[in-house]
Structure formats: structure tokens, C-alpha cells
Image 1 (cartoon, one colour):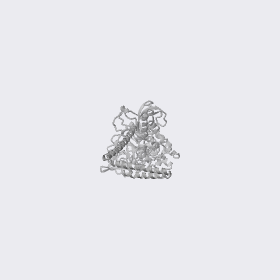
Image 2 (cartoon, one colour):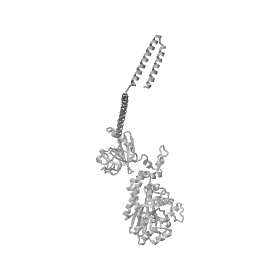
Image 3 (tube, one colour):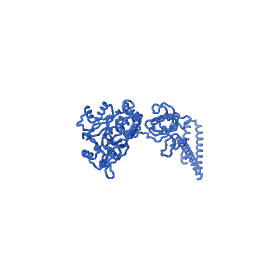
Image 4 (tube, one colour):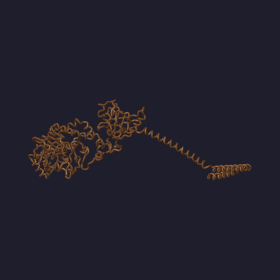
Length: 601
């Protein structure tokens, strides 16, 4: 009220001033009348205002409290209505979000499938139930399954493209087999179709997904299944891949020639180094060619076993923790063995021979081999898989070479006939030709090899030294020209470069009854007739300066109790794969290679 008391006289004064200004422009009589009338009106207004102010000051405390309460009630009601509108709006928004939300799916039973949304990530598959679904193989589409059939497929999302109301994706199975799947917005079910499109946009390449749908006729040139595609009815992510991958499988699947040819274009393909690939080897092995290499590795083991079983062999499993070195001159990995020093086996050599002494006359093994050699070459590993065999002989180690030759023929023929698909995929990225070989063993003797190499300009010295890589390649070229084979054997190696258990040549102790086997001019196998005479073994050990410690005591003792003459060989699995496929590095033939610089992953 105090402020109003000050304002009202101020307004009155302004009114008077305005009247006087107006009067200066009016006739005198009028001025007098206006002045008197105005003053009278101003005086009356002032009196009424003052009287109302006095009346207001006379309100009781109860009246004042009532006015205040009414004012606060109006304010509270206003706030309540505002909050109510806000809550209603939030509820509507939450309801809309809930309606659009894609929930995780726990797929327990095919019978209850209609209760599950047709899209959404699976909750973690934890063996909650067996759903009763039958999953099909992509490779069976077009034969076992035809247009009109409904199928479930599980595979890896190779690529996906969502645009507007449509989606096209490629599902990959086993690295080799691909099929296109598609989804189109349904005008009769727009909301559900929109949610499906929304979900499809969230999927990342290389995720594992389940697809269900109907097969329809199609013409798809970019997939292995070209005459059919799948119309998506359900899709669920089993395991989502990160949106940021170390590299794309598509990039890793290109040949070096294709990558290099693209470098001068406006869209060059990325160069993926060996270390990047090996650091993410699980990704690299998804590449069809690299996956195929592992399948060929498996096939070689299978064919190796088949051939030797058919020739009367049995498989054995020898210790990989041993008390001493199994081969003289080769580095070993040592470890503590309850207070004593043990080594990782460099080969099953000693135990293969003791198996012969145990009357297991033909044995083989597929197992790990460890070599602590700092060899930083494209053909050496610190751990590889050995394909070893040992057999009793009647007269001559040539009996063993004939078994080995028959075995390799079985492998070579089997690869080209039974695993032609895998070879075709591999050769699309890594070009190679089938290995050529002779029907009967092609065996060169050391003197012939020396003459060939001297004719090619190599200085062979006293002809008792080992062959270099360049010499082996040159010898391979010469043998291919002369005998028409990529696969051959070289025997009668100098004794000085062979292990202590090698039988000396009966006519010249400078040489031995030993042999190496080559593919495309590189060694894949080393073998020999073994020295089964215990006293001769001890003399050779002494001559080579090798101490016959505890590790060799049982080995020599097994010969003193009677043992058949025997011979055998050790083959490097990865090296066979590497050379048969014409690869540029043995690491491509190893699942997770170990070399002096790599012990992970």
C-alpha cells in the first residue's frame, strides 16, 4: 500500500501539468472552467483513494489470512495441473518408447515361437533348453532344401545393407558357403516391419545370427548359393561382433596381386601386414583361403593315418616331457620338473625306437615338436606338428622309403580328388599347381646331387657339408627338369651332419643310411635307418661329443634286450602344407604359429 500512496499523488501532479499545457492553447473562459473542473475531479479521486486505503488497513487478520490462503491455493492448483500434464506427457513418451523397444529374446521352444518377437538379440545361450529347431546347412540349399521350404540357418553376418524399407544381407557358414537373405517392409503390418528394419540396422558384420524364413527362387551371382535366397521371417543375434574390427575379412581375402594392382587407382585396397593378421589370427582364419589351409592340414593328417593304417601301422602317443635331449645339436626348451631339469621333446625319436623294441613293429604318431632355435626364416617354427613313423625292416631301409612314397602318393591323390573344393578356394587367393610325382620312388644318391650342384656353379668343398636353402632349390629345379617330379628323395647324407642314432653306411663311414625328402626343392622330411646296436650307438655318441646321460640310458638299454633293425622318418606337417600349396611363409600353414618373436595368441 505504501508504494501506491507515493504513486497516486505523482499521477495527480502529472495530470495537473497536462491540463495547464492544454489550457495554454484554449480561450480564457474555457481554461478557467477546465481548471476548476479538473482540480475538483482530482481532489475527489484523491479522497476516494485515501478512504479506500484506510478501509483496506482495517481488514482483520483472519481476512488477510484467508486472502493469502486463497492465493496460495490457486498457485498450488496451478502447479498441480502443470505436474499432471508433465506426468501425462512422460507416460505417453514412455509408452511409445516401450512400444518401439526391441526386447531380448529367450528362445526356449519352437512350439512357443509365436510368443517371441521375430527380431531381437538372444539372451545369452546357456543351455536352458533344447528348442526342437532343426538348423540347416547352407551347402544343402538347392539340393536337400528347395524353393518353398522354411529353414533355420545359423551363420556369420558377412555383409548387410539396409535402405528405406528393404534389407539385403549375406550369411556365411564355415567360411566357404554363403547365401543371400532379404526383408521388405510389409504394408499390411507397418509397425512390425518398421521394428524389424530398426533391428536390422543394429546388426554388425561378423556377428553370429540365426535366420528363419522361406526359400525363394533367385539369381544371386555373388554367393555360393546362386539359385535361391531366403526371405527373412525371424532374425536374432546369437553373438554380436564389435562395430570396430581389426580388419575386414573381405580385405584379408584379396590376393597380393589384386591389392598391389589397386594401389594406383583412386580406391586402393588396404595392405594387411603379417603381424596384424597373426595378432588377430581368429579373424584371419575366417578368410575362406586361410580357413581352407587349415582344412588341408587336417586332410593331410587324415590321409597320413589312412595310408599307414592300411599298411599295418598303429598309432602311439609318446611323452613330451623328457629328461634329456632327443636329438644332438638341436636347441631345447627346458623346464623345472620337481627340482630337476626336463626338456620339451624335440621329436618322439627315442620312444618310437623303443616302441620297436616293445614289439610294436610299425608305429606312427601325430604330435607336437619343440625346437628352441632362433631361426627367423619363412620356413622355420619353434613348435610344429610332427608326422612321425617308425618300422622294423628286414634287409634294407629302402623298405621304409617305399612305405613313405606310397603314403605320400595317397596324400597327394587324396588332396586333389577328395578335397578339390578346398584347394580351389585356396588357389583363388594363393596360386599353385598340383605336386607332380613319380609312380615309383625317385631316389637320388648324395654323389649325384653333388655333381648336379657343381654343374650349377656351387662350390661343394669336400662334399660333406649340409645343403643350403639355395642349393636345395637348385637341386629341386634340376630334378624337375631331369625326372619330371616335384617330389623326390635324397639319401646317403654325410654322417657328420646327421644325428647320433643314424646308421652309418656299411661301405664308407663318412656317409650314412639316411635320407631327406623334398617338395618343390625344399625339405619336408628327414629319416634314416636307425643304429640299433647299443655299443655302436655309444661309440657314435662319444665321437660326436655327446654325453650319454640319464636321458639316453633307458634308450640304449632297450637295445641290449633285443630289437629289430628299423628305420623311420619325421615329417613336418606345416611344412608339407606350406610347400604343397606354394605359400610364401610357413606361418600361413600354422593355426597359431610359434617363432622366436611370437608366443601369442
